[in-house]
Length: 391
Ligand code: NDP
Image (cartoon, rainbow, N blue to C red):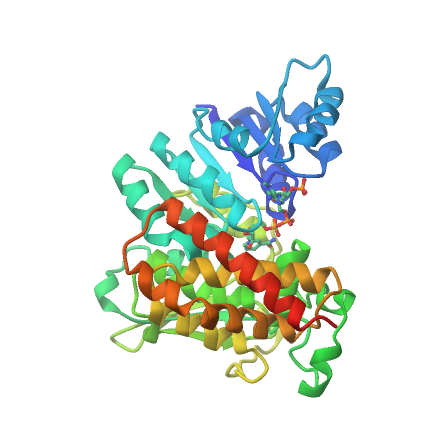
């Protein structure tokens, strides 16, 4: 049976890896919607190559360019935030959510209404609105499959297991670009230095988030939301080789580790073929040649983001939305050269503290509108905090 698939964030690193897998079995898939933002050439080229029904950019002003690029192909072109959400209504058997940032929440949330399978790379959705997403999936009989490598690893280690037997979940972190830098050099780290990951080829934003461990801090929250485990039983372990992606510890003392090459096509392919395992074009590890794997405890002085994530989980409610929005705004400021590398964590912490009254007033329950409002407030506040710390 031909499966109808849509990819949100098709022009990005995850989106391109997904298309790479689909291109290897073109008869098995029919591409429905592909979406992107600024990379119109890539979006149009892929829409034509895969015979998509519709291509969507989130930027209204780029609709003309997209239409021109698709002229004469019969492929629909659309633009804007609403068009993005509407594309998630198009019937599809499998939908990849790989937009970067909080912008991925609305289309992913909408896709669940179809009762379909949502392959979720966009971790920000779970960090900002995890309980809403899970409830929406349950309401419509939809399935959310993890694509983040650590969560895919945990998911795989849990096959056939009972969550009640799980003592702890350990997610690994490479340590990113500055793992071995002297602490005193971190304030002067440049954008180019922060944008080089030692092991993974990923989009620029997640690569910088790996250097600051904001990526891992989002993943801590993501772990709690996916697997419903007490935050005290989630650990982060620095593992520079990035070959073990996660471990699950059971009450009998067993630790089940997921070992694989640092290639996102594994986790994407697992979500694409689940519950089957199919051949995937990833490297086969030669452990004898690798020789040894190393581990160390994370240093919270180097990576304050980890402490902040734990505080956010303790606060609960909309704290995840504040944390993510402040992080995204601080990252914008770092990329724009407005603040130094270590200022990002300061901006996020100051934003969380500055909005503690609003967070307390918002209570535990919330809806998507409250998430959007808090996101907006946090971006404004983080912008002000970044200006105070401008280089
Ligand atoms: P990229 O930056 O490579 O790609 C992001 C995608 O989102 C692109 O298609 C981009 O379009 C689009 N986009 C950017 N801004 C917007 C917006 N405001 N509205 C709609 N679309 C937008 O990111 P990655 O592929 O690296 O990451 C995607 C998601 O997957 C993130 O949530 C990340 O945390 C997660 N993830 C990524 C991993 C990786 O290996 N890359 C690993 C695990 C998780 P365009 O390019 O046209 O501008």
